[in-house]
Structures are given as C-alpha cells and as structure tokens.
Image (cartoon, rainbow, N blue to C red; front, top):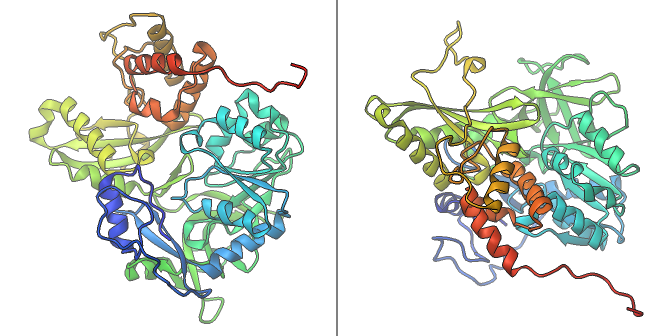
Length: 501
C-alpha cells in the first residue's frame, strides 16, 4: 500500500501517485482519476513489498521507500516480544499513516488481539485532547515524537493518564531533561527511546530510559539487525569516537521506488558480510561505555523538525524555481532553546528587489501550494548575498535571525475577544504586540505553538478550537469570528450520572 495524505498539495499527490502507479485507489484523491476499483488479486510472499512510504528528497521531490513484508514483520515481531504486548493492550494511533511509525502502531497490537484507539486527525497535536482520549479509552501504549511529548508533559491533564504502561519516543533527539519531567508526571511508566530511518523498517535500535541519565542513548540493535559505526574508509571506530552509522540485516528496505541510482548510493555492499548490503544513514553516533549507541548529529544537511524528516534541498528547489529568486537556502534555526523553526533565505533577482513584500508573499503561497505544512518555512529572509566562510562555503552561523514583529501600525483589537487573542498571540510568539490582521504563522508560529495557543484559548475563553481552525483562520480577527461561531454552537460536555441522580 501507498498512504497518501488527502490534505497534501495536489502537485505532491500527483507526484506520489505517478511514481507508485497503483493498481487500485481506495479513496478519492484530488486530481487522481482513471485507476481501477476492483480487487487486484495480487499474490504475496515475504520479500514482496508491504508498503511504500514517501519521504522528503534532496532532488526536488519526495522519494518512495519500498519495504518488504519480511522487513517490517521483523520490527513488529521484535516489538511484540520486547514490549510484552498482550490482548489487554490498547495502543493509541497518533501518527499519520503517511509516516512509517504508524506501521507498528497499526499492525502490531492486532497480532496479539489488542485494540487500536485511533486519534482523530485534527487532535493528533492537541495534548489536552490526547490526554482525554488516553483516560477515556484506557490507553496503555503510545508513541510520541519528543516535541509532542514536550507539549503533553506541560498539559495538566497528562497526570491523569494512569492507564499508560509504556511510551515509545522516536523521530527526534530525546533530551534527558524531557525524559525526567515525564517520569515525574507519570512515574512508573516505562519510557523507550527508539531510533531508525524509513529505509530500515521504522526502528532498528532501542533503549529503556533510566531516571537520572545524563544522556538518553538510542540503544542497541533489535533482533536480526547489525549496526556499524564507521569512519570515511568504512573502518570501525573505537568506542567514544564519532563515526557514521551503517545498518545491515533483515530490516533493510528494498530501496527507492524507480530510483536505482539513488538506491545504489545509499544501500552499499557490506564489507563485513559476503553478499549483503548495508544502509548508509548519514547519522553520526558513538558507542558509550555501556555498549550502547549515542546520537550526535547529521553528516549532511538532512534535518528533523517536530519528528518530520526534511531535506532542505527540496524546499530550496521549490523556492528557487520562482522567477523572482536567484538563489534559496533553507535551514533550521533554534534561536530559543527547544523551539526549532524552518527559515528560508532568498536572494532576489535584480528586477524583483524593488517589491520584496510581494515577492515574499508569493514565495509563502508557493511553498504552501507545493509543500506539506511541516515543510513550509516559518520565515522568509531576503539577502543581498549569502555569507561565506574562508573556504567559500555558506557560513550558516553568520545567517541573520529572522525578525518576527507584529504590525505596530495595524488594526488594534475592537472587542474583548480580539484583545484576549491578540495578547495570547503575542505571548506565545514572544512578541510585544500583535495586530488583528497579523497571521500567526507568518509571525513564526508552527503546529506545536498552535496547540499551545489552543490550550490557552480553552483556559481563558472556555472554547475548544480544533487545530485545523487555526490553520484556516490564522489572524486574530478571523480566529475571533470563528471562535464566536464555535462558542454559539457548542454544547455543554456530558457528565456521568449515578442511578440515584
């Protein structure tokens, strides 16, 4: 199967479907027609493809990773034994099916007769909703990216999620401070830090967090998996020395769909096992004194933001294709600790420099039309030229921080609701003031900040606003109008009653 998010830009959907060339389309997709609707009757074996997941690509478009039944069942089988999954388990599906972490969430519990509790799509990033769902459905197992866990730990209702037995954390570096805060909120819940790329059937290493750890390792390899920490000549490095991580074993994907050259460049011959391949992850790691792997960083420019894998080159190619842009560069900045944001730097062409405002607005629209929401930069910074270091490469440390400022001369709030929302916008975004026509996302907001905004609105105005509403009505004025409509149509929450009542 090839999962396709229906809210992806139409151009991206067309690219995915065109590459995959499916024999059957189960649900109507934008601008996708002409595919059969009957059962294709395809026979399968262990080495046939189970699914194709498309990830961000550095060459301007997403690339499809082909994973076999044998590979993914190796990961699922390991998880069933390692986490001691039983028919009593209730796993919450938080991850979108367009990302590979969803695969063990979907198919793992069913192997043991367990239940899957499916979070509604507009609630996946709302910690208050997730906490309520965990409590109401007695969820025992959940998988969070660290940035979502950060928001969840800050939600007061999280302390009531006492049905949780374990939590798996994956997708980003896991800070020990965050792990410690979670352990204080829900002591006794087992916390596992997992690591793995899409190209190796979701996850290939794991570590159970121990309170007081100075770092949280990514752990040891799972069943039927080998890991190598190698130098530039593919020689093993000693413990404590940083090297690049290579993976081998049953979990490796077959490669990239229709991309033999790219496949050959990342899935290379393994010098330590005759006739086998290994996958070059691009991740820098080291062995610690306990014989576990510690994540250090990337060997290239690939990044992960709020759990999403992003190739900045794909963003750069989309922006550079605009006729008013000479060159584009996309980077992740962390100007405030723990707050990672995508920023695009653009060098306008000479004939476009006279109207920078229109150009930046056009680039924002282009990015929203051609890229998924998580790949749209939160700021576009025009530059006359890119700063270079002594070797002639871009000096990323010299790139200026974006200036997010509210419209000092813009329209001011006209009523109490707009006053509250303008104040909340400013507080969450770290600004002095915000006008009622300022766009939350144009001021540097992103999905996790939007969830914080929703929580504050719930506390101060008593209104539950779906996160999709913030994306569709991102200004103070628009959100005030929409929240008033929601308040007028909402009903009081039902409460349990005893027979005597």
